Image 1: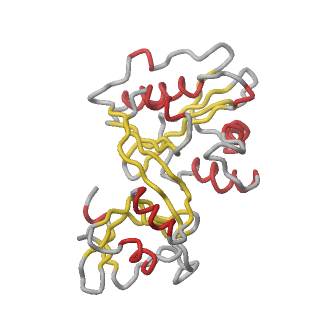
Image 2: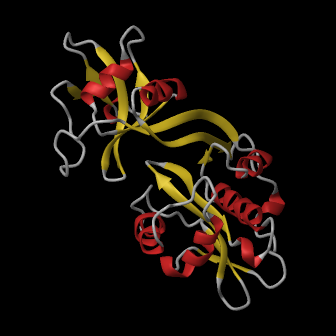
Length: 268
């Protein structure tokens, strides 16, 4: 990542304390991939003072210190990567037939066509369940993902599975996250059956991404999600673990989007 992509926060003496990638999450400014630059500083106290109301993603250790001071946990997650060049997918992953009665089709359908299967896959009790009602889940999660506004544009290696009645029963949505191929969602309608279909589709996506010359594929899995075992079985390797929290306090300029304080400067 280029240095210009980072925002660096300094203390009153001009010493760099931390850096992060600036984004937006849940309508709040988001300090993503936060890294501590001054280990001697009270980083948690600095964040509470400088980034009240922000969403912060960083190491679990920092997240736990923020939670002890009143922050709210949003997600404990693990980032995985599959190298497509050093470890190309087996040839039989590409175009392998799906089980009887199913067809693989491009992920170019309206969000409403995917919603039933997607919502059922992340039902109440699932670690990635969206607690809002269906209208909000469609508009704020699935709709934004497919529109390229949640992570980035949907890539052509994405794939859906439809049944004999042309209903979407499963899918893999691969997106472009700042130049990185990123799995936004893998889902399967559990009440439609077809156990293992998500794995079948993910193999197709990985193989297609490799055929298109992509170097790797990335994804994030929430702590406690049993899908982690699937990803590891397909040679996705753990890169890092992070804790995302909402810092207590009110935004200094609510509604104006990400706010750069007087001590915030891009670059080192």
